[in-house]
Image (cartoon, rainbow, N blue to C red; front, side, top):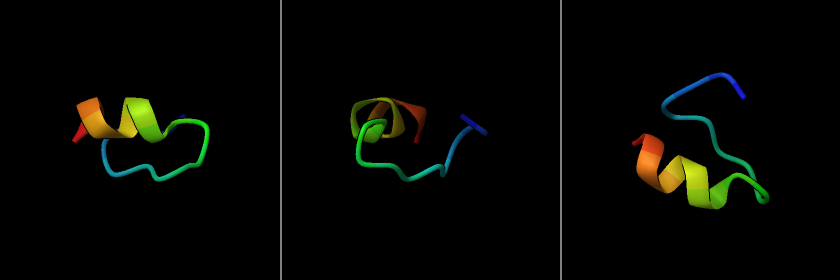
Length: 19
C-alpha cells in the first residue's frame, strides 16, 4: 500500500485505521 489516504476494497480495514 502507499499509506494514509489509500482507498482499496481489500484494504478498507487498514485504510480505516490508516486515516
